[in-house]
Structure formats: C-alpha cells, structure tokens
Length: 434
Image (cartoon, rainbow, N blue to C red; front, top):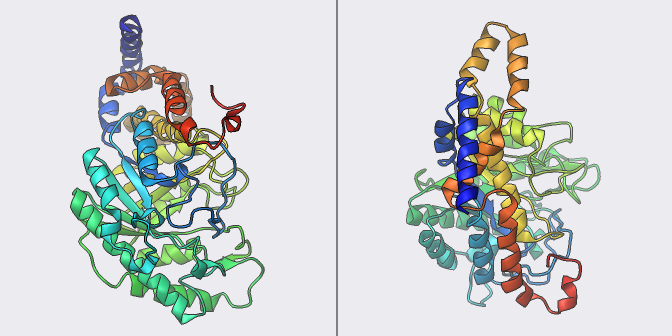
C-alpha cells in the first residue's frame, strides 16, 4: 500500500505541474470538487419498488429491466446498501428519496395522509451519516394513477387526492430540510399523458396548471424546502402527448419562480440538456438536473462518462452556474449489481465535474472574446491528453476511498457477505459476480 500510495502521489505531482503550465491549479480544482454534493437516488437499490406495493408493477410509464439477485427488500436493507455505495464515493453527498419509501410500520397509510413521522427513520439515518435529503412525491404505482392521469385527471376526486398528496409531500420535505439544516428539493414529476393522439390538449394542461397552483399555495421557507417541476417529452403509455411538457413546465417555473428539473433522458435523442442550462437560468432562480443516460429513449441507463455528461459539467463550471444548480441521479438498472451501478454513476459525474474544473477557463474565454477560435480549438484538444486520471486517483486517495477499480472488490465482498443472503436460492447467482 505504501508503494502504491507513493506512486499515486508522484503521478499527481507530475500532473499538477502539467496543469500548472497551462494556468490550472489542480489543488483548487479538487477543493472545489469536494464541495459539490450529488443527490444519490434511493430507487436504484430496489428497482423503484418502495415499501407500500410489494410485488406490484410500478407503472406510470416506468419500467426496470433485469433480474440481478439481492435487491433491497426493506428500509434497513436499502440503507445498508446506500451507505456501502457512499463509502466508495469521494465527498459528502445527499439522498434522493421518493414518498413511496415511507416507513408506516406495516399499516396502510394513504399517500395523501403521509406525514414527516413516516420518514423519521430516514431523517435519523441521514443525520447519523451527515447527509442531506431531497424528496419526490410518488404520482405512480397507485390505483388512482391507473388511468395514466393524476393532477390532470378529469375526475375532480382523483385530482383532489393527488393535490393532497403533493401538499403532504411539500410539508414532509420542509420538515426534512428544517430537521437536517439543509434545504430539501421537492421535485414534482407526473406521468399524465395520452398513448394516442388527443383531440384536447388544452383541457388537461389547464387542469394541471390549476392543480399545481393549489398544491403550491402554501409558502415555505426556502432554507427548508425548494419546489421543482420536471418535464418530459414522452413515456410508455404517453407516447403521443405528455401533459407536463418542457414548454409547459418552463413557463410554469418562470412565472412561479420554481426550480425547473431537466432530466438528461427526457428529451428527443437529438436534444441535449447541456445546451438548455444557460437559457433556462436566465429566467428561473435555480435548476435541478437529473443525470441519466437514455439509449434511444428514456431508458435510464447507468450514467457513464459520455460526451454529454462532460458537456453538462463544463456548462456548469464555465458559466459559474454551480451555486444555482442541484445535481441528482435518476437511473435504474437491475441487470447488474445495484450497488456497483450507484458507484459507477456517482463517480462518473464527479469525474465529469473534475474534467470541467481542470480547464483553463479564463484563457479559453480570452481566446473566444478575441475571436481567436484557432487557439480555442487547439487548447480544448490538448486538454484531452493531459493526465486527468492522476488527479482523479489522488482525489480518491485523499478522500479515503478506493482508487481505480479497487472499489469493485468491496462490492464483491458485500455481495458475498450480505446480498447472497437475500436470494431465495443459490442458483440465482449463476453467472453473477463471484
């Protein structure tokens, strides 16, 4: 270990000199990276199941593929998996929690009757591990969402149920934020939409507008809770028309001064959210980003270090948007070890941010302002071969987490020690990690 540590430190010293030669202070970049929390989504750990509808399909246009054994079946199992993943990721982060993960002691509690008491286990766990929590109402996997409509439903009674659920969740989020001393982002996404071409798009969107206004009527201290609304292009069962479209929620967020949530998988495959960030932040106070990876559609693949992920991170750093943007993950893959999926996604987002922080941004801006596009392009291309990996390895070492792919052995050990005990039979593990 001593020789390995010495090699990592030596490589970092060389990398630091190379970056210093182009005007980049790697120590400052790493210090900045250490201050950026990412909200890790709980639903990767149990395939978006929650703890109220065991064995039921999640619906709402959501689908999780894969049958990798060992998924969490209880809050304690999920928390154990979460903290195992977080122990392999540099930095201090947050938990992104859905309302369907309430702990009700086995009692049937309707979603419009949920209170902060049903999330005290999560709050105490987060306090123990120095984590913030973000929150999401759950507008799917429920009989009152079976038609594919919730806040835009034609039935006033069903709309009332979901408005009350939204109100309850805002109160819960505010209580979480106040209890933990860090503002809780409460993000609203609904599945409402038509599978085939509708003749009336206006009516549902007017109903959604009025439902949202009623749901958001009660003011809360922004130090405790922030509201966000999330748009989508299409979903399974809503291919022809999504009521909460980008245009709808962009207008709503601007006029009501809410956070707009941009999900990397919620747009046309030729669209990218990196290009939208600077436009939207001209008009809304803050952004929430759901970092995901769509493959031909909103398939929520595990986040990897794609060009678009790097472009998102660079937009945040180059435009000094980090103080106004909240970053969360949103994917679910049951075809691989679920803890590994978290670690891969979280570390890739951090790598993208570090790559952005290692750019000589003032020099690049100067080239651009002087219309010296030749020098700008040349510098951007030279950055690709600078020893970024040595800086990342040093960051992991300094943060006390495994360097390189060494984290995978920790996941394998946890799988042998914990996850195998959850499987019904050992034959389920054939061909899995050994």
